[in-house]
Image 1: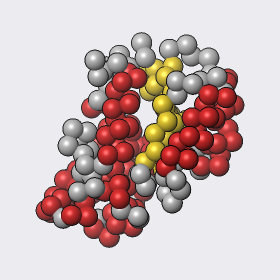
Image 2: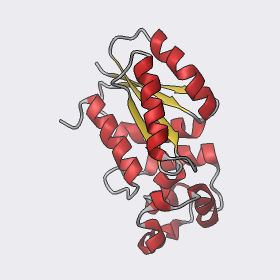
Image 3: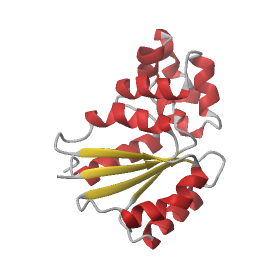
Length: 186
């Protein structure tokens, strides 16, 4: 049985994943979430957690936001941390630019989850065709869905996201990697 362990930098990422993972993982796959207190805490404590992990069937996924950093440099640094900790097969994924980009990739889900319901009409706008390019997705999401709150919104939206139609490339790469680790892409 595959056990997926997610190392995350914020509670909202956990809420998102708890909502969306049941749609893409096989029933026999189990999950566990380790939420750090930000990026620095993740980078400091991740090697300790990886070295100390004893569950033999575990597969590890590290996820964090790109924010204004260089995506390739961030990923490279995290991969190096995982290798040095003895877990070279750890999957590292970066949300380009931030978690809210995933939500902007499926405005119909946002509308169903937190409103307004007519958000699906915004899908046709050029700015939402590639949500990973938006420099401040959180601010954009709050503008078009004023009731959005980070943790509660992530919980509600995660349950509504459709992994097969999301336009966020970084979300799709994350889902593909998770499915591969779980063996549900075969």
